[in-house]
Length: 274
Image (cartoon, rainbow, N blue to C red; front, top):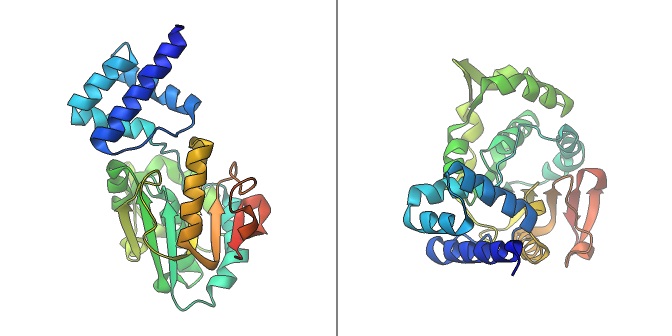
């Protein structure tokens, strides 16, 4: 048996153990990215094999927390892909103005940068007071950071430019207070946000939404898990609801491709029509 084949078996056993003991299901994540993240953890824990990581993860909850943080992808930014937010302002906001109350699900919200971005946009468009944003992630650690709403001050220059490119209507600095090396965002942005744990790999639908944003999450799943999540998003989206995906993601060749129309194809904004 080749070394890579043995390693694949070890990874399979590790993921099975994590699922059975902790309930986190990474068994259908994209293999290449998953393997890279597992080896990052092995090196950080100063171990030499996948089996050694399995032993430590199953017997040390703090190691499991670090492992979970490494495996859950937390690359995010405020007003990431500004043209997406610009399209949202021009194409989606006019539709939302016709709703008396708006439920938005930000799935896989990570540390919350995109949640605060959407709250700012909705405030500027005069819609935030009748919105409820459900911000979910499987990782409790990143959710705790999201709830606090404090981000590195050094990122504000980049975020300010992205906010401007996204059609921002004010001075971006009006939304936060600088303190030491941090930017503390206004508590008013959190008033209509519910942060909650939800695992796209195993949990079911929990409400019906007018808008679902699930951006840059599906790219880390294999086809089987992508189909599960597409089913979940479809079941959770009301008719004529809006779905926003990441730039590298698409509805093509999914079970629900024909159930949506493109609202802004380049920005991966879709409207459920069936």
